[in-house]
Length: 602
Image (cartoon, rainbow, N blue to C red; front, side, top):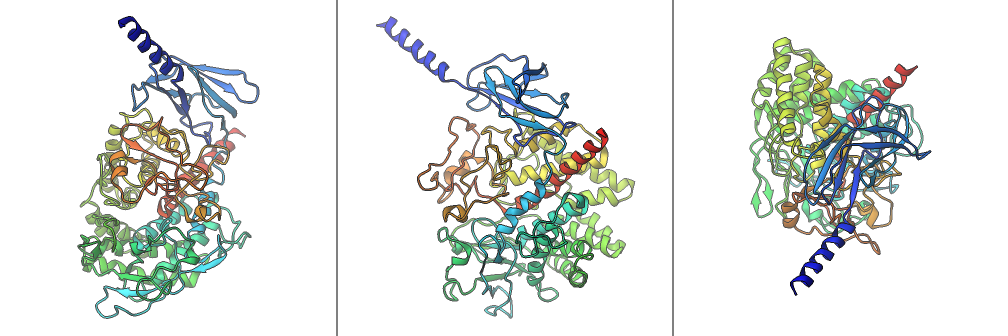
């Protein structure tokens, strides 16, 4: 009997080993020739790996054997992981990696791999438009809205139609929209040559002589201008979670907020006092987090739009200082509101927003009092608190990186520059200390919208490297980049249809997909969350589209977090407007890197 038991155990072990798998995770979009290139090998069984091969995908011939291999130990269900560094290889072509018994997907190396990628993201921004929506070629939410929480205007109608829907729901927030606007403006300011003109102002195919990203910026600023109709009168939010009444197209939205089905939604005044959060009240302490965002967008927008829309640029520029003053008068954070459930944007910080508002006002006016105020605000939060932390509440520390620190490091005197370069480095290093524990060199906390944090850290790493020439975090920066394009536990890109030939989310949480109206092309999905978060969310599930199950990636889920390609998983697979917009800077920078490398070869 003992012999039979031993034989059975041996057979089960052999069977499990036969089914054990090995994989190589890579950036499916590809690599610039002169860039850091690191793939990750993972295996369900223990493996000793000392080298790997680069194979020409067209000929099948080995082009190089590389021994730059780093063991990174066990990770989740994978008993062996290795980092495969092939940075030294710079020859253009199409390749795959062979390591152990695994072959990677085919990937390109050339100077044009990132061309057009920043513009590609704008496909999703156009889909998210409220008011006239070019994706469905119809208008929605044209009756918005009715004021709440204003001391004298509650119940009055205000025209705030426009802007973007936040995600698959149709709520709209100044918090996320203003950050999206600012990030796109910064991307254009830094890399104007990376953006083309293939769409008109309404989002229809056809050039209008204005870069498409400017069209999108103008769409957002038109709405932000409506959300600030008079000096000191700022609005924070349109609609609330009563919107969560099932998937439907935006032009078919008939949610009744008490004004009649589809006949208008609440518009929350930025009161600076607590507002509803389910059965409780949120933790609003002031209005500065919103006011600073208005100020920075209006001040920078007045300069970005001046060549294209001079009268409008003057109008929003004239509103910037009054918006900033609201933040001085009402210091503190302004959180969003909910009615049915406790989920809100729990923004706790605000000095970062006032710092950025002050910096942009200084650059607009030249008045040094704003520079002095920016420094004062900046010293109250030297490092964005999530960096290096294990967790945070939803959007607790937002925006996820402090652009004001970058401007102070760039424009300040030597002492100020040194101080804020050090602050930027501290946030990066804290993240790096967590990243080295992962074979993917990824040290981001897996809270809701972790991909947005990845994008923020990418941006901070890039700006720090440009300011200082310090390359000590360059490999982590490359790993954060590659994470978004498939060098992650699941081997999937996190951007819908980028690259088109690769593995990407095919079942994003999307009303368009649910209705058979296409998918969220160009949208950056939320990304992985801690398994404990996923288990306790309300209404999240693994349902797929009809006749097609969702992808649970059960074999690859690390112990720590989960990601699913399933339409029912709004926590990991829902694209967000602000996360997508915030990636425009980094991808446009990579396109410009490619152009420089191509020029240097000539």
